[in-house]
Length: 267
Image (cartoon, rainbow, N blue to C red; front, side, top):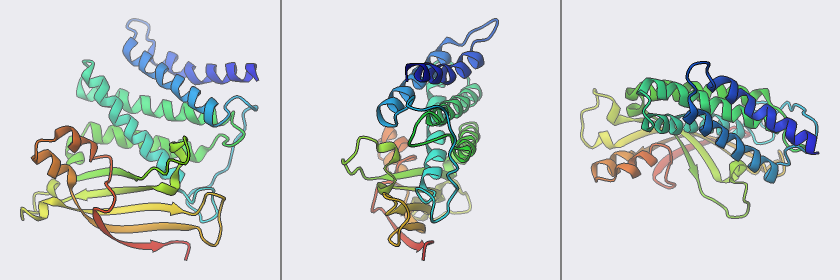
């Protein structure tokens, strides 16, 4: 088991060392940030997903089919996590003195490698396994974070958010899909042709979530696609002087603050 863990850790950190350690100028802050992230992933995986217990193997998880493990919620989760990490790391790198363009690039690259390092770790887990589907959505999440971080006008019009109410029944909140929803919000305030002051506070939401997949697919399993109309709470917070709250609300959807029409794709 010890040899497997050492092998896993080497595979995990090698891409960061080779990517960020340049011949003439080593970007120490980026390197250390990614090494710290890799260490956290390794620790979490060893504690919760039994990383290092078996030799590497792959898993064919499928996409959004009704009989996949989580009904596709895990795929949206991987996209959102990579997107969120990319944005967060971009902000961090910009605060360290990188230009907005460079910070967006390094942030998206870091999120790409960290999330796919997790996928490498999954290959050593008896519960998980390496998934090429997850790698694809990680890549899409990374590219999206770069696109939005380097084009602020897009962020004024579109948000990618998560709605999550913890159950407090498990420490592994990362895979608690039964309490999670994912959505895209199209915000009226970002479009000049909408001039009505009240309409500027509205947004159109497209969301997806699954329920009753804890024990795999059953007759009770649901894959919900919904269209909603909500209030742009980020705009409300920003205009009330709560700038940090406004930023947070660009990524988190407060429950029960929208009206939605839902369709169960399993019916």
